[in-house]
Image 1 (tube, rainbow, N blue to C red):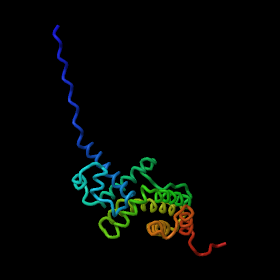
Image 2: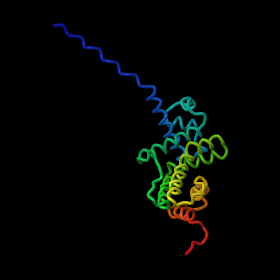
Image 3: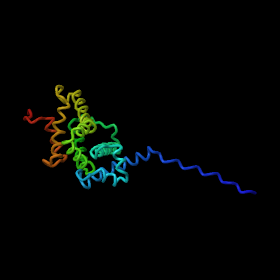
Length: 214
């Protein structure tokens, strides 16, 4: 009996260009965030990011025009990944009926993130670069900061509807009473940041500085 020829093996499918691009993109994100932590933003370069990610410089420049843009996108992705891992998508400040407790809880979570080196170093780098790069600063505010602040606005509006906050206040201004001091203290090292500090900020914001009626 003549030997039968074995059927030719099907060719392995070519790697998807989309899959390759996503793999490279994630490697670049990881490289940018790691280098900022290890060597600081000033010493982080496109060349260094490319070498750490195992890609060519041209790959990075095909998607971004500067290391600031790379870091911005990587940092936004880091926040989204953290939210997904915590099951917080979409996220809203809890409404337990106790406004003070809800605000203190979310600010404590903010402290945890601020003191996490994965977030601290890139966030400081972006804030510092934003001082001299208006376009980057506006993008940072629009894509990252303002969506977070709107969560406070929504919670304060709910509190207004429940009668827990004066109806005449502007929630967007009111939130700055506890968010802005924390941001300043963190960014400029004017004092330690702690749960006790943010709890006090909330108490001062909600109850004011004038003596309370007996």
